[in-house]
Image (cartoon, rainbow, N blue to C red; front, top):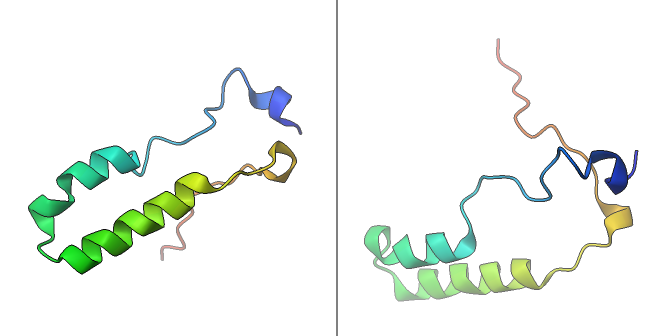
Length: 68
């Protein structure tokens, strides 16, 4: 299966988690630690800077649960 096989029905990015900008604006409402917020923002920046080659993308079933 290739990217072209799913282009018309599968989104490139899932709806969750919320976009980084949405999270960043709300962080001060739930965290009162400037160093932690800075670390979170650095993590978002590193994530957003990643470039994934389309050949390296995979389809993942991300809500698998091993419930008894």
